[in-house]
Image (cartoon, rainbow, N blue to C red; front, side):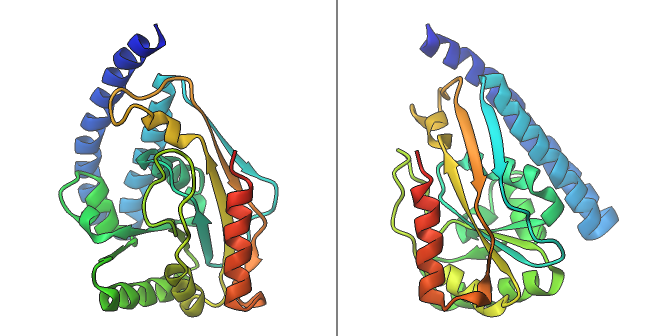
Length: 243
């Protein structure tokens, strides 16, 4: 019975999701061309709020946990495990005040309505994982960008989604570049739990009744520890909070 319900609710979810991608692509273009960064961000914030609450069609429950104050007027680097494409909208929505930008693979920069436009025009960085020179140069510029504007970088050091919730090995290169070129940043480990369960059966149907948590851990001043100790602390913090 639950599987049958998941087919029905998933069809409804995707109907609104796909149409939302098309509608918000146009709204992003309009916002960017009329209001530049601010206009574009308004459209993106509404889009991510919409996509976050669309998950409630599936009976999803989303909880953001932050037991520690998030630093104000400072660049932030959020380091998180990665479980689903549905990680992105809740992070963007709940942290919208902090202007989150993502480290993403270059392949996502084209071909996906709304998503690709946002990655290209919203301040995120697109890296080519097969071109180390391009990736390092792009991360350098990205670090300088969040340092200058006091924005938030979101990086998934696993490099790809974990389809069963079991975390992959964290790669240190991205975080090393960001902390080097955004030295005044605070690094905030974040643990995502259960989002992978939405895609337990693949892209369709989506699982129903999943309870997802996003837990922000204690911020760490990027220059307060040598990088090896910082990286170890961040990785252990994220993984130790996994269910």
